[in-house]
Length: 66
Image (cartoon, rainbow, N blue to C red):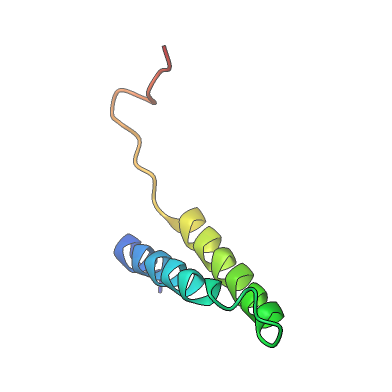
């Protein structure tokens, strides 16, 4: 079953919050590499969730740049 946009947005929010939490450990000699991997993994979660969001086009077509 496919997840709703609301669920995907919550996934994005949670992944961003985890990235922020891991930020404090990036300079740690003991945890730095694991924190870096965790941040990369959560950024991948954000990317996958964003790709799956439904984009609605306006009825009159896409916006035009001036």
